[in-house]
Length: 178
Image (cartoon, rainbow, N blue to C red; front, top):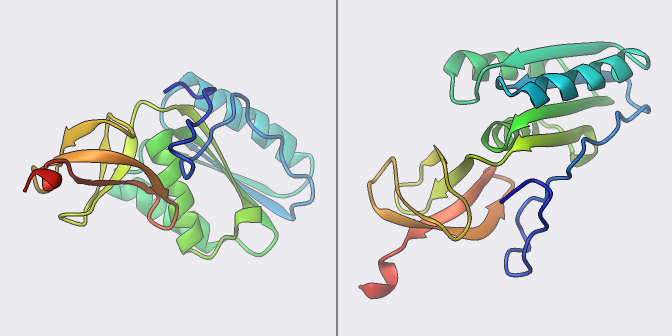
């Protein structure tokens, strides 16, 4: 699925990614801009956001490689621990990284009005395996079947996104046959 495609009606809970990033919310008291990954568009968007944010309020830029890296996750947690009410947390990167970082921000207490995400590619996605209860990064999406990296079952990725988990639901594709 490309970023500018709309979500089919059979998948109403899936995140919809705009083709262009949202402008910076000028009512914020501070900004945390998080750029994840090496895609050129990530750096471009983060740079535009930082420039706009610095004109309004104190701004911090955090650049991370991937949300699968323990050090990067720790850096994200640290940055989130330093934000206060009124901050806007704006995150750019690939789908897996943005969804994972948004989930971390929600878990740290951020509310929807404080969060913005922009996805530069949908090449990968986080899935939650209902069998082994693990969350994994996969190069697939809703409607696809994959082998679970945790339990090795063949999983069907469902058209359901759980924002609390920051993942698409996946379950045993062969369960109906049993």
